Length: 203
Image 1 (cartoon, helix red, strand yellow):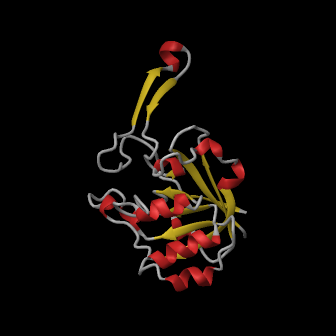
Image 2 (cartoon, one colour):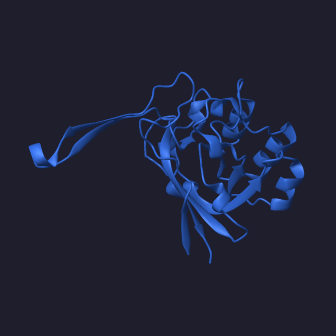
């Protein structure tokens, strides 16, 4: 098995959604001075590679701690939409319930560009309806957001009990071999959390 990390580095230079606070990391003790090193991390729940819970967009929606670990691990399906996300590509993928769908836009190749958050994949109503019908555990994208205001895709997927992950990177490392995705957020009673997302690829 080969492990591929699909996670952005989380630090003060990590790009954040316009209007969100930047990541802050402060060392408050050191080994030399105090005998141990300790740090304080201030992070928005949607900074860097992260997972959205239904409560992110839906009044009364479930928060992340409502989901067991099985919701964050599953067989991976890669859909390459660098030239558009047509319904045919999803039909060919033959999505099964519980799968984790990775949408490759290529936007993360330029995540430090000023217009990174101005780009989002265009998912048609037919594609979104198909995803809700097929019931994957999670849909993830290598872009700053899965859609733009008024966030109809967010609301449809989360309303269909499908979690969302954003700001993945490195999807170009996934070939045609079968893979499993592990996308574990912090166990928090909140609307989202940074996550370490890994693909485990069969040799």
